[in-house]
Amino acid sequence: HDKTLKHFDDQTTAALRARTLCEDFQELNNRVKALRAEFLSEVDQRNEVCHSLDNRIEANTKGDNDFAQKMRKELESMTQRLEKNTAGDQEFAGWVEPRVLMAGRLLQAGCHPPMFPPKFNLSDKAKAGLIGTSGSIGQTLAAGGQLSA
Image (tube, rainbow, N blue to C red; front, side, top):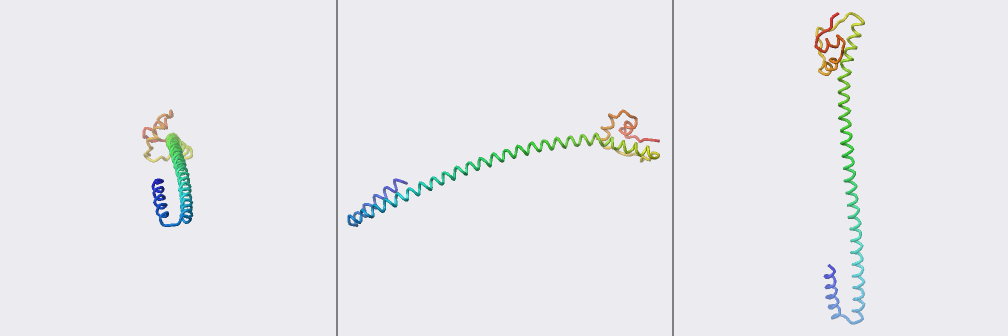
């Protein structure tokens, strides 16, 4: 675009020289050169501002990407911990449920004559927890039987 300006300047200078007196021409020529220098200075300043903005946008985008990757990793870590915690809670519930049922039945049997329903159902996890029990009550309950007085 600098060649275009130079060509325009040459054409304008030639046209002005043909139409004006020597003194007027010099004054006009100096004014055109000053305006051209001002214009080029503004173009350079605009280019510097645009370059600075481009750099800032690039840095901001990189920061956003870094933050997004960090958050994704943190969320994955939290998801894994939650899944592990849920599995532990389920395992604990499977261990506690049969023991709580057993304790409730034993308390009922100790407070008054046993009044068990004809049959009651335990969950698979409760049965699994009772299988490891060495007492006859736990084995009977795990087998699906009922306690008798």
